[in-house]
Image 1: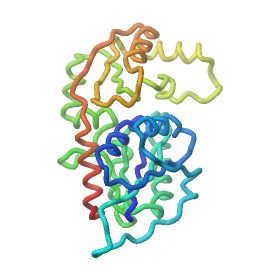
Image 2 (image 1 turned 30 degrees about the vertical axis):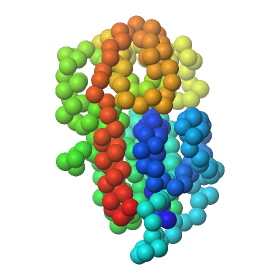
Image 3 (image 1 turned 60 degrees about the vertical axis):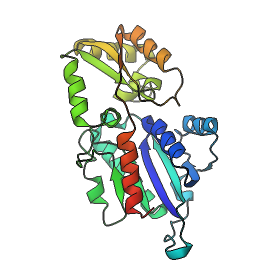
Length: 269
């Protein structure tokens, strides 16, 4: 049985749940325990999907060559590796971390769905860099352009993203998907752990947002409802930083679905 590895920013865990629910041919689900998996496991329990966990990538056996011919079937397994948020603030470190993870993942699977975008313009060559090792598919548009980030993927690509940003007419706007709304703003700036108090972190966040003329927090509806308390989380951010809430439609799973299917095609699934 073939095995697909999914290496993802934890912000995209809802999109993985969507793929799991819309691809019933997935026979086995394995989740790597690395300290950021608990929320994802709770959601798997909620949708009633069975899974197993392993303590690390090194606990997995190497992938076996897939069966061919009349004994082959269409089912396959997935191994999911959620990656912590926060590395994005240091693009070089993000690339080093993701490439190291890809190298460790490669012997364990037949192909990898890399659920990232350019993310600081450092991951755009991942498919090419690993082409001689195994198939890797990153989040990209139908024309082959790698999306900028998770929000760009949800919106459907760069054109939609740029049009949305232009519509704000220069007014700073935080764009939140349901999973983004669950993470403290400090996670995005990656302050050194223990260096600042919560009050100091708040003051720095407020200073940066005010200095950049941020006035809105936008609630981007993805069509997925795996994450609870979206409205409440957005309102908390708005109240904390004195921002106005606006609603955004247009989120979809098209890019995630297309890229996942591209990898399946490369693996003859």
